Image (cartoon, rainbow, N blue to C red):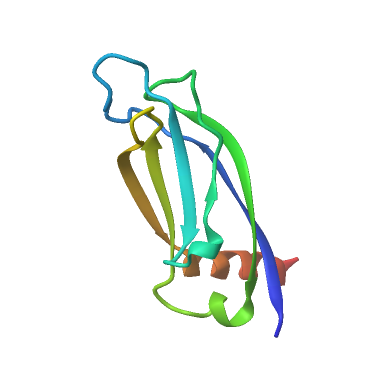
Length: 111
């Protein structure tokens, strides 16, 4: 089975809801492909930028050709605020990975 390696660069988020009342928000992101826990990767915690975190973090995945051709598999990015008494969920974004891979495949075929 053929496998493909790809990178996703998570740059930043803007204007997040401030879930802290007293202290600054320290935000990190967790990315997974679908519901597969083995694909979970996490950014470092941004302790400086409060509601506008920046990570510039690259995630590298190797995925089988079969998985690339499955419909409905999403790339899920969840944002959390790091806290001493337990991290707080801020929100998430879900991206359909299929259009992304189709675009990449088209660009590779044109080269």
